[in-house]
Image 1 (tube, rainbow, N blue to C red):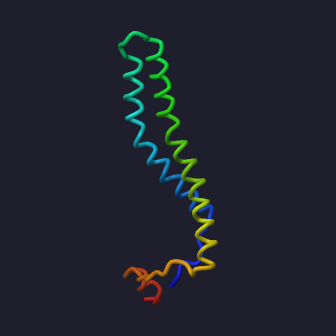
Image 2: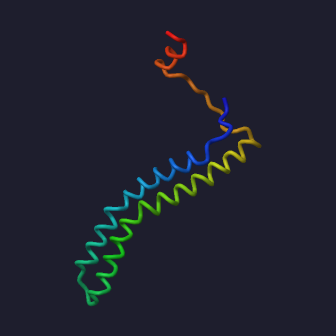
Length: 108
């Protein structure tokens, strides 16, 4: 069996969701950095507060940015896969049905 093509939109949606969830990994890091900036010492309290607010905004935007990038890159990757699979033959796969699926397929 060969995987000859993939749905561009379905791959893009899955990659967007996966990368959006991966963007959540950075949320605590940016929130801690933002809190540190807001509490920060140093000579210029305004600059620390600005950096703190910027980090908190990035914490909120990071999953959205990563999700959008995953969607776009997933669509491009799926399109390129379909293009190349048509010329090179796709990915060869050896699929084996699950035991429950084999029984249902046989009509038992």
